[in-house]
Length: 110
Image 1 (cartoon, rainbow, N blue to C red):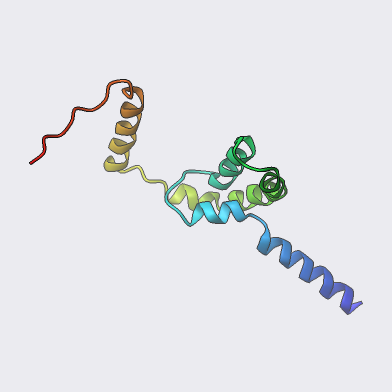
Image 2 (cartoon, rainbow, N blue to C red; image 1 turned 180 degrees about the vertical axis):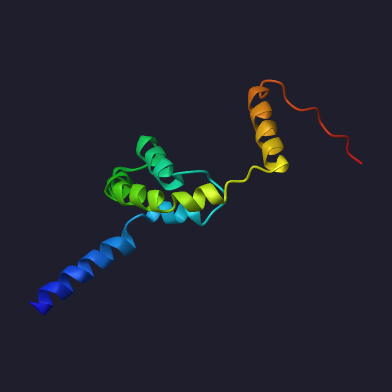
């Protein structure tokens, strides 16, 4: 009885430790918004450059990543950056993306 309980506890702990890899990796980086691990996993599944072996591991990990992202949702909402600096940076990125047809003027060399 104790061996069976210990085995179940070990398997469950292993699944919890190994599950949610994309979420953990995404949360160790910059401020990515809400559900960054799930979005990263979905992007990898839809990417043609990702091989089938990696896609299968991502598909197995995705439910655990979604659960981990849900558990970390209060933290994501808490660390959302709404400062003036971040809003200006986002606006500049959008403007640069829409004006990508017109290249920037070359800077003078000193």
